[in-house]
Amino acid sequence: PDGKLKRQVCACLAQVAKHSVDLAEVVVEAEVFPKILNLLKDMDVYVRKNAATAIREVAKHTPELAQLIVNAGGVGAMV
Image (cartoon, rainbow, N blue to C red; front, side):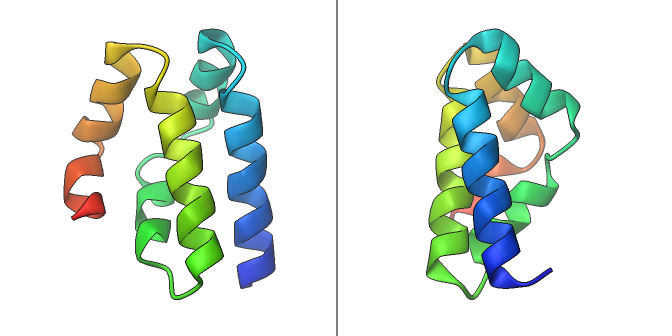
């Protein structure tokens, strides 16, 4: 997909996930992990930013959701 589409998808996922634990879980159930983690290495800075925002919006709700991201390779993707 092109950069604009990736930027928009990540922004939409962040907007959905930010509102509640239930909505963050819906994002997780869409099986975006670990795919979204790969976008942290995209050439487009805005894709990287929006991907990081989406990941943050999921992780902030519960330790279990944060652990899911770690288990999907989140720590390695961020360094």
